[in-house]
Image (tube, rainbow, N blue to C red; front, side, top):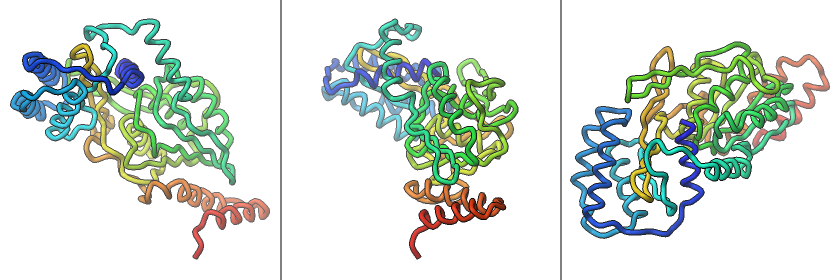
Length: 341
């Protein structure tokens, strides 16, 4: 999964509008390689039966650039599979040759520079009025890189009375970040998910960590997750796992519905296939969220989710607070947040 995330970052860094064309014969070779990879590795064997014929029977006689070719292949894959992870990606820079190619020191340096520039996906860390913690993430960087920064953010929020984690604009990333971030929200280890891989019939368990850098928020205080129609992949995995653990309240919209961790394999000099090879399942029910998303506990438009979460938290804190001055402060904040009647 981290290799997939790394290669995807590399492709994002080098994507460009430049294009090149291949001959019809070369296109057929590329298509056959895509079909072979899907037949061998794609997580859903039932959909595999239709994906190959859809690709081999499509008309690619008209010359087109690699970029246009990638878009057409991706469209066919999406129409048949309805799987948002399954796609062919184009890069102006030549891709690494061979599926076992290791990143070079320069590749690793570029990845780390990108992650640093994006603050490892951490957009905001804030203490809101009423002693409410707020963490907004845009994507999940691999835990090996993001651990000190997630730890610093969670330490700053550890003494708040309730926590809001904003996933409304988080479009996924490294699955290793899911159990790592979740570890701050429990007092003991939890079995969050099983990652099943079709190739090799392998199941790997995801558990929270027994030790984390910094200070845990803990397992007793309330946690609210904000979601939207754009919340995707690993971000959905966090919401799905924590809801099944009955650890969070989800507020917002049903998420996009991508439960299939993927690998990215170079296909030709400028093309790489992202193919979902696994699925993330609840260890008890064996369910995932592929195609259906993760539904909120409190359904509101995404734009209203942050205010709604604060209102729910403050009402609960007000009821449980015996200090008159503190209750008055909470009431004043509620009046600021409530829409005019």
